[in-house]
Length: 335
Image 1: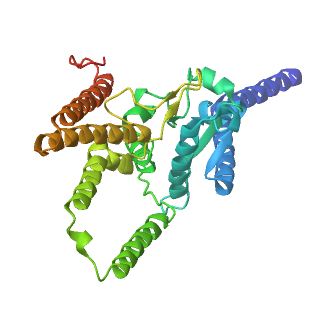
Image 2 (image 1 turned 30 degrees about the vertical axis):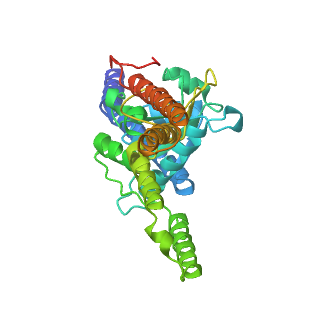
């Protein structure tokens, strides 16, 4: 009888222990996951307090950006900043990305729900392979839950990589509003002050002879310079902040003309200014030979030169336009 009671007591004890293990195991798993998530967030917060953009390699990317659990978003810049890469665009994009990250880091709404990180090709080539990327720079958003979607890759070709454009895209993907604060740049004010000083000094030195102010040619050249600047896309450059040119990281070829009608390079606007100026110069030659009363032979030669300049440089302008607007059917002299 005593043995039966002892066996029964042992059975009841084991049953209770088994029941407790079965009931508590999910709770232990949840607690372990919460602890792992807390450690990851704490580590990311510590890194971001030292540097707004966290530098990552392949291991850190897989642990903190791809692996679960994760309740935070990561804005990742994939770049190639090493000098041997000669990626000017990467350095320009990195400057704008740093501005956005600093604006978020010192924002009153800063929280542990959004982090900024970067992976350099020379430190994480495996990350580029995983994401199937073969060019830089590139910006991607990794949401707190699920995998990145099509809209989680920032379209640099369409919108450029100005800090304001990146902040707007982040707001669309995460509902986090970042007010961009740029460091003060006094170069424009200094240049404007020097310009006014130069003009004032010139007027003071010529105060007894100001007839040059009534020179129509000078005013005409000044007006044309403004027209060339505005029609070439200088205002678009000021707003969007595009790169000067683009170097293909695979072939090393430098592109000065953007292949899309939705974007442009700074070098492209300089080329367009020169072409517009050349066409204008040809038109001026045609006009001058028409109203002048010089030797007929010389006038004929100047007329042919002016006509040739207009035809050739207008053909170049039309060729650039056709290369950007694919499907445009017309061309002249140069295809």
